[in-house]
Length: 360
Length: 89
Image (cartoon, rainbow over all chains, first blue to last red; front, side):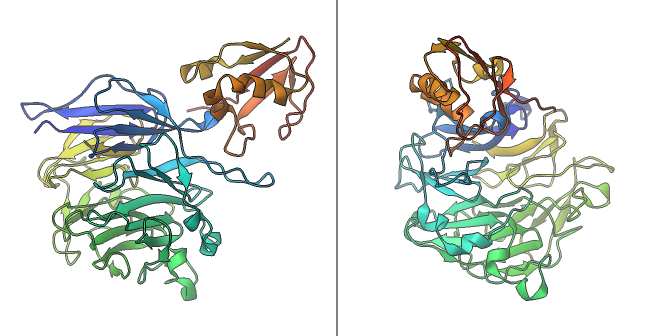
């Protein structure tokens, strides 16, 4: 395996490569050193790489490195149309970036804070806000979850029907289009928000899915790590079943699903709400292999208590084989597993806070 | 001609040397600079073409007054500094 893991942090982009002897080493120098990297994409269709930066004072920027190139080039970032008056939206964060289908070369989808979905048909040279979703009246009921404004952080493109997309919004629930974004349906029946008044607990638009992922080989099967727990769907996100027990906690931000086995998924649990540290100060990964009926608690190679690592929603990834896993924490620790989480090795204890990581 | 200076911090991201422009207001001065450097505009203005909230502009030693319309007047020999607010971490 010559795998490469790219890690976007609060202060730059770092790469780690698996060496012939099985050891992982940092590859090359940090890129964008000092700049917050909030999203990464390696487009499997073209080999092009993308990195989204949030420069704070100077706004959100997007860079692309073409497959054969050595240098990054700044390209257009999504931009909200100018509105009448002074209160129009401006891009705060690029929170998700995914390629379209195999039959849609050059097509990219981006999810943002505030909650916009943007489409590019020219590999990010230009972007268009998907007005059909932006203009939905229900969007007025979306609200911020962790940030002041709502945001789209998960976009699942159906691998065999690339005009079908499922989105997850914090906080705005789950949405689906089957015609490439012309029309949208709010889905997500069965998601439950215990943080709302009882009569609103199952209101689909009020849900806070922290992260939603789809099994590549079985795209009707999706998992959500929700603010309120873990949920699974086997019908494309229309209906969800709550998983009531999953090791130390069902709270967390990240979830990864095995690309070939929809019943296998991983989570990094934490104490919910205001603490947001591992339960009993003990960092573990939980894994189900039976669709959530049972969970294993995995800790071999992870630190002894106390550990206060929190894992953000895009900072857990599984590779296309389903064997390699990696996660990184807000305290700058990075681990990789080559056996689906049974054993972990630490690649660094000294990175900046980790926002996102992706296997090539 | 008024001189428009940009914080050296910006030079990391985009080429932005000091420019001399003929303009009677801050807004027209910035537009004149951006006409030759559109990428720079995205670092200074947000999606609504408003000054990004953590950008500060000083005109002849005085903080700008009109952040919305950028109507602050310039003299023919004004010095304008486009800076970022400081932050920690």
